[in-house]
Structures are given as structure tokens and as C-alpha cells.
Image (cartoon, rainbow, N blue to C red; front, side, top):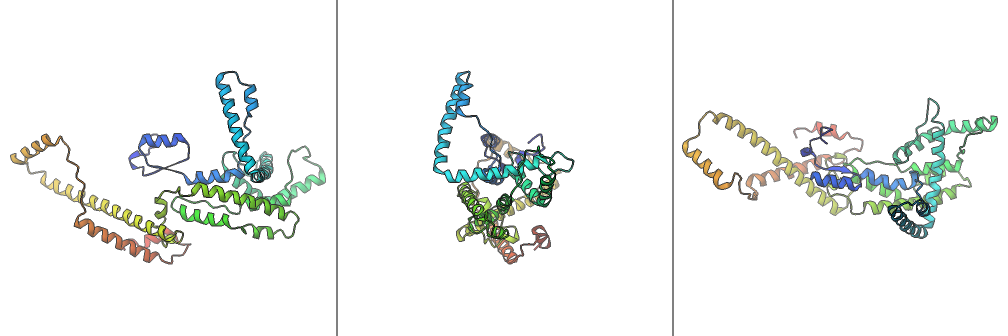
Amino acid sequence: MNEWGLPIEKCVKYLRDGASNGVKACELLNVDSMSCLAHYLHLIVGCEMVKKKSDKTSKAMMAAAKSDEDIDAALEQIACEEIEAFIEESCAATWADLDKLRRVVEIFRKLAVYFSRPVLVPQTDCATRWNCTHAMLLRMLELRTALDDFFGHVARTREFSDAKFEQPTAELWLVIRCLVVGEKYPTLVMAVPVLRTIERKIKDEEMFEAITRSVGNEAFVPRVKTLMQSVRRTYVTLFTERFKEKLPMELLWISAPDPRSAELKHLNHEEAKTAIAHLKAAVFEMGKDIRATQSTSEEDTRVAKDSSRPPSAAKKNVAWLTEVFSGGTERYVEEAPTVADDKLKDECDSQVRQYLGDAHGTRVTTDALQWWSTRRGK
């Protein structure tokens, strides 16, 4: 953080991936942290789109073992394989469908890599990043007409006959179209509204109907629908387990300052009550900071005016005694709410109510920053 010029004292919350070293670093820095939602989504979508790594088997590791450490690693691999075998036996159909989908993605990946040789290249992906796989597939869909023309040329002329790639069938194109149809990506402020939308989307059993109808009564349509419904159910399971009761409380209310979501329709009744309460508390804390800053400025002005007057002997003596008996520190006393605090809280609550009323019915196409700029000073 020092190298990048990021002052740690101004860091409110650090977004990290799920790696243990990131968690440990935040603990050492005493920085509040939360796991990045993007990484949560990457872990879910990666099950279908990211290329699988070819891991060594326990037999290969045991055969190559040259030390006790190598044997321990091989035994650990055996235990992992036993667990994996149990999971695969329990979810045999699901794993088969996921592998089938990965093979489809791999066909398009090989095409993208093959055509990356000329100067004008399609977008290729990185095996560890699902989002660039998604971008690659979208680009391949855009190039479908050109690819069909290319394969037609190959069939007529037998040119490029030595190339090791497979022509995607209409069935494979349909699989890819279904795979990318539900893509949405939330920013942190809009995390809960977008995640709730994604949840409704993937739980919709008819989410592929419009796409499958677009190809007519082809014989492969039932196969594709069966495959994608299996994948959809897997997404639902992974999504539910990943996000069930794991979102920080701040995410419930930080979307409220966006006038488009100020009505909190994406939350249930209890969540909305909690969100409004936290929003009012945050506004009150911000109001106290503003008031303290103003008071400090006024005090600095007064001290500057009084600095020309030398302190009396009595004041010097009191200051010295205070230093002696307090050890240089003041006793901590929890501040009781003052009349000024109560007045400020009422004013903040009134401002929140006025904002929620003004934001009612805001169009979804509204620019939130522009909306706020026109209401500055209200």
C-alpha cells in the first residue's frame, strides 16, 4: 500500500479474494475486510467455463516419489481422489453435464487460439479467468458468419486440412448462446439488487426458451435444453451456497443512496427496515463528523485570537498539576447523548425521509450523480 501511495488510515474496507494470505494481511494491518463478490461469482461460473487443469494422479506421484515428503504428498492425493470419487458418484449426472459443457467451450477455445496467428485476431482467453472466456465466446458468436464461410471454404478447397480444429455444429452454437445469456456483473454498491436479479434469473426454468425457440424444431434442441437445465440447477445450488447469509450487513443499505434503488424493492420487509435504520445511523455519524470539523475550525480561530495573550500564573499551575496527576492523558468517559446530538439526529432522520420521498419513482435510466447534483443544498 505504501508503494502505491495508498494511506492505510484512509482505508475503510479492503476487498480481497478468499486466499488465506489476504485474510492474514488484513489482520496484521488491522484493516476491516470482506471477500470480493467478483471472486465469489468467478468461483461459481468457473465450474462451467474455465479450463480444467490436468492434475497428477496418486499413482503417478507415488511412482515418482523420491523422499518421505513426496510419499506424504502422494498419500494426501489418494485421500483427495477418494473424496472426489465419492462426490462424482453422488452427482454423476451433474459432473457429466459439466464436463460436456467444458468440452464445448474447449472447441471454441481451440478455434480462437488457431485464428490468433494472423495480425487481426479474435479475443482469446486465460485459463484462470472466466470473464475473458465469456468475452471470447461473445466474440465468437459475433464472428459466426465469418467462421461458417471459412469452414465452407475448407470443405470446398481442402485448404487448411492439416489444422486440428472442429467445426462447431448448430447444436454447439446453441449451447454457447444459452451459456452466456444470463451474464450480469455487479458493482459493490449495487451488489444486492444485482445478485437478487441473478438469483431470480437462474431459478427461472424457462430462461432458455426464447433462445431455443429461435432455432425452430431442430432435433438437437431437446438435448441442449436437458444439458442446460442440468447446468442451470448446478448454478442455483452453487449460487445459493455461496451467498446464503454471507453478505456483509453494509451491502443491504449502501445501495439506498442511489435514487434508482431507494425504494428498496429488492429487499424484503425486515431487510428494508434494517437497511433504513443503518442508513440513518450512517447519516447521523456523518453529520457528527461535519459538526466536529466545523467546531474545530471555530476553536482554531478562537485560539489564534487568544494566542497573543500570555497565560496567567494560576492557569500555568493548573495545567502543570493536570499533567502530573493525569499522566498526560484524559480519563475515558463515554459521552452521553446531548441535546445537540438529539437535535442533529432528528434533522438527519428528516433529511433521510425527504430524500426517500424525492427518490420515489426515479427512472431506472437516471444518472445517479446528476440526480444528486441537481438537489445540492436541499
